[in-house]
Amino acid sequence: MEQFFGEYIRQLRTKQGLTLTQLGAKLDLDSANLSKIENGKRDFDEKRLTQLSTVFDLNLEELKTEFFSGLFAKKLYDSSCSTDALIVAEKKVKYLRQINAKQESLKL
Image (cartoon, rainbow, N blue to C red; front, top):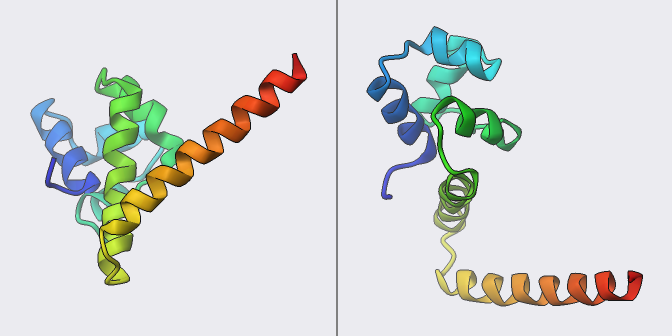
């Protein structure tokens, strides 16, 4: 998806016919803050992803992918960093998972 997370939330909200106030109440946010999120002036709090997935009946893992991909893209753009950083980051994630798997097997 090419839009940012706030725009995605707006699209979901309007598709369901919810006002900013109604969705804000479901997410424990006031409508002013939700409006800032939708307009890209404030970041969405990752702690609310589960609530958002429940409100819109979305797959939480897919929602996390959408959320974090937007954060990564914005960070790379803001720092004028090459997208090669994503390749290196993927390798580091695999490495962290290997370490974690080894530690878990030692616990057993």
